[in-house]
Length: 396
Image (cartoon, rainbow, N blue to C red; front, side, top):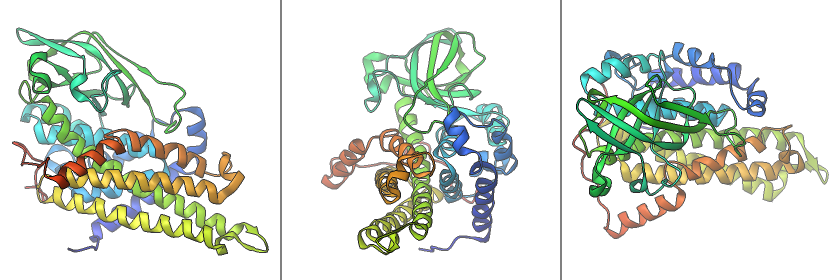
């Protein structure tokens, strides 16, 4: 296995890091407090090719490999989780799903403008009564001629008020349980669609999150993604991509915690010496460092499997579970290292701790991933190649 990054990947990391340091770091405390970031950030991300970094050039993307997407997510979350979340949802959950499952017409209409950053894509699966239990969704789409009539509600949807297009999941036949779920591409401008932001979130406050409502929304048959009944399969494959980006972002958050903690350890003195010289503080730093490297290895292993076109549900689950747990622990220790100052907005570590909790919950709770890994070990769960896989890299 080659652990070296290509010159192109090294340049990408440098570019994203410079962007984060110049465009996000100086403003994030203000954006976090105000509950939203400058919308022009989208255009600047697009100008750098970051909205479609791993989408083939023929579909408007940069044509880079899947680990390049991991690099982007890692560096963006070093700035703030809200920006990694935006790319995770737009690219990981939506655009990569269109790339894998969309018809050529759907790719031309939706994927190309999304990869260029001209349009924003999002993903609607979770409902008020259905999170980990996907089969418990209530949204229903009834076919009438050449359209489907969609009714229902989604919640905790990132980019709810921002996205132009949504991949939405609804039952078309409830008697078949999860085999009766179908995926659709829903446009914001379709009559009967509305959205509402959720206020008062604990973390990721600079990001837009909320609810989607569908009241007799007429969706053309050509906006169905895949066949009827393939929705559950499509959703699970999308989560393999989303979880990959979440895990990569967690690596960036650990790095942010390390940077802030090391800086503070060199500035703050107690009992006549720098606090970094106290063994128990050093132990917390050492654990952050270990978590950073272990998480990174898990993430880039998944990226290589994606590059080869190999199904990676098991490996992605492990990376997402461990990286997010390591990030949550690193943020908790970073606050502890900062003492009372860590409990204030004067330093960024309180924001890191608030932001670190959501990824432990969404796209599969740590409990769900624990059960998945146990089932793999016991032989109760095995992954077979999907009927449609992401294209191998390099793209033809």
